[in-house]
Each structure stands twice: as C-alpha cells, then as structure tokens.
Image 1 (tube, rainbow, N blue to C red):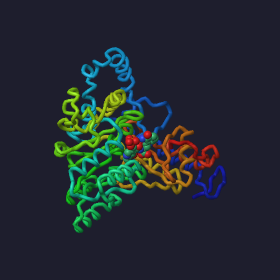
Image 2: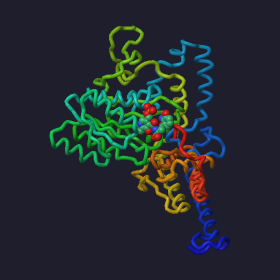
Image 3: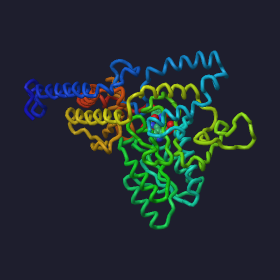
Image 4: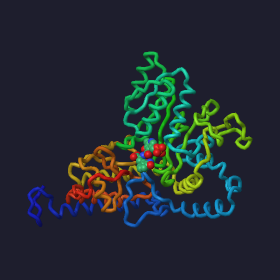
Length: 435
Ligand SMILES: Cc1ncc(COP(=O)(O)O)c(C=O)c1O
Ligand SMILES: Nc1c(O)cccc1C(=O)C[C@H](N)C(=O)O
C-alpha cells in the first residue's frame, strides 16, 4: 500500500485508490444490473425507499399483490359473504390450490403439495409418516447443524417411534448410510435441509436422495432456505417427502403457512399422525371414525389460517413468469458480487458461505466477533441482515427484489460500520429477543 496523499497514513491505501475501487464497483453494479434487467422484479414488491433488505431468508418483503387481495378477502369474502365463501371463494380448496402453486416453484407436479400449518408440524407429519413407510427401520440420519426446530422434531419423533438418531454433516451422509447398510442396519429416513440456515451452504440434494434410496431409506428435505431462491426439482430428483415455510423466499408474510410435499407414489400409504377433519374423506359427514381423503389432502389437519393462506397465494404471483433457474442465475450473480464487494472494501472479511456456486444458497454468512453489534449498526445504516449466534452476520439475498447496486451499498455500509467502530457502540449490546 502507498501512503495516503491526504492523510499521510503509511498503511492506508491512497484516497484516490479507494475512490477508484468504489467507482469500479459502481460501474460493475450498473453493468450487471443492466445485464440482469429481465429478472429485476423490484416493482412487484413494496419496500421502504432506501432500505436494503438482506433478511428475506427470515421474512420476505411484501409483494404489491398482497394488500389488494387481503382487502378484498376481508371486505367481500369475510365481511360480506361470510360462510358462503368456503364454497364461493374457494376457501375449502385453498390448501391444495396454494400447495400446487408452491409445487410449481419447487418442481412438484399438481396434487402433491398441501399448504397450511407450520414447518415444525409439517416435519413432524413427514417423519412420522416415514416411520410408517419404513416399519422395519430403526435409524434416522440427520444433520446436527439443522435448524433447531428440525432437530427437536427429529429427536421427538425418534423417541416416539423407537429410532436411534445418527448425526452427520450432509456431505458425510452417503458414507454413513453405506456403513450402516453394510452393518445390516435399516435406515428409515435421511432428513436434511437443502440449504443450511447458518452457513448458507447448499447441499447436494440429488446425491442425498440417491444415497438414501440406495440404503432403502426415504429422503426428507426441508426447503425453507431454497424454495423460491433456487430450483429444487422435487419430482425430478425423486424426493420422497419435503417441507418448507411460506414466509422467506416465497414472501407469504409473517407466520405464513408452511407446506408438505408427499410424492404421489407414497400418498396411498401416507398416514397422517395428526388426522384432522379437513383431511377426512368426507368431512361434512361428521363421521365419528377417521377415513383419510385421497391424495395429498389426507395430510390436511384442521381449519387453515385463511387470511394467511390467501396472502401467500397472492404473494406467489410475484414470482409469475420467472422460473427458478432465472431466479437462481440472478441470485448467484448477486451473492458472488456481494462477496467481491466485501472482499474489496473490508480487509480480512471472513465469509463462511462457500465461494463455489454449486455449494452456495442465496445468502452470505460473515463471521465476526461482534456480529450482533455489526448487525445492529448496519440496520442503523438501513442495511438489514440478521445475527445468528454465536458470531454470524447473515445477509440474505432475495434475488427478485435486490440489485447489484444494493450489494455495493451493503458492502459499503459494512466497511463503514467496521471502520468507524459503530459495532462497538454500547447501544448495540445484545438485548432484543428476536435477532
Ligand atoms: C430450516 C428451517 N426449518 C424450520 C424453520 C421454522 O419452522 P416454523 O415455520 O415451524 O417456525 C425455519 C425458520 O424459522 C428454518 O429456517
Ligand atoms: N420464523 C421466524 C420467526 O418466527 C421469528 C423470527 C425469525 C424467524 C425465522 O424464520 C428465522 C429463520 N428460520 C432462520 O433461518 O434463522
């Protein structure tokens, strides 16, 4: 480094050099945004002016299509037509209809996805159903780095059905499965997240499904961090069961319903461990005995949260006309460019997320000793990411509403926070519940 002409600081780069780096990044951003103009869907979302929302992997932005639909649903369907709306407004069929719309995003043909309930409940259903589909098996393989709710459900179901839980990083799962099989152990299911919530690492979904099937096991995937951000190909890759939430890259809003995919081949044997009346073959017969509906409808439980479900349905239209490959292409460009900006502007930045496109979901996770303070200080600069304990600054990149220019803004803010030590401000000591 040459001494700075203005400050005379011997170790800082010259101001002119710094300005040239910034100019170059701005020019690259403008060029890349022009190249990717086709997939810029920012106009389909209502975001506060000047905010860079890098937290769509926790709560997606509000699609412009949602408020008018909710207004109509509340005023006309609920307010005016009341109970008639179960028939006239298609409320009864909404879980399957919205399920099909989600299916279109994750590569599942119609009739295999049902929307409603929470990811936690959906995973419980999936794993309990796996136990019925693989009655002889005594082992569940899952990732110790899974989102906590997934681990809790895995251990909970294992305790209920008498499985032993084997923990392995998804990269190590195929070897573990082969070992278990060689020892004559029967594995019921391999449960994994397609993209890791903490590192942003994307696992090899087709390879994991193949390994599961080679071991006679089922593949159960959590799509929370991939659905809406990249192609999943549930049917193409022969996934058995999958779950996901509606509030991240599907932009369904806070508490949006989750979903469950049951591959058509498993539906006749799918046993719902929470057999509610909405999943009954003839709900209004009010029969005292449960008889499952045909198809994926048997995975329904009780009355779905209609307002949220219809908000999610409207939200999904924000992705209309842009396929998952196109979203992925934009996402990879944005995350690669964000990394490049950070590496240019923040000396020693520690990016945990893999550099390799194949291995990267749609976020960058940065390790920092004062990650919580960094996240709070960034938020004051109108760049919203989140903190994941113990030391991760998570920057989620929801491609449809973010631009390459936003990536420069975010990296610049990150550099400024650290340079001015804003993250050490005592106001940024950790005290909020939700991070
Ligand atoms: C991978 C993963 N699974 C599950 C959940 C949450 O489950 P639920 O929708 O039941 O809160 C999240 C996020 O909250 C998640 O990231
Ligand atoms: N589901 C959430 C919630 O109910 C409150 C706050 C955050 C969330 C999230 O979605 C967090 C997210 N699953 C994560 O990857 O950390």
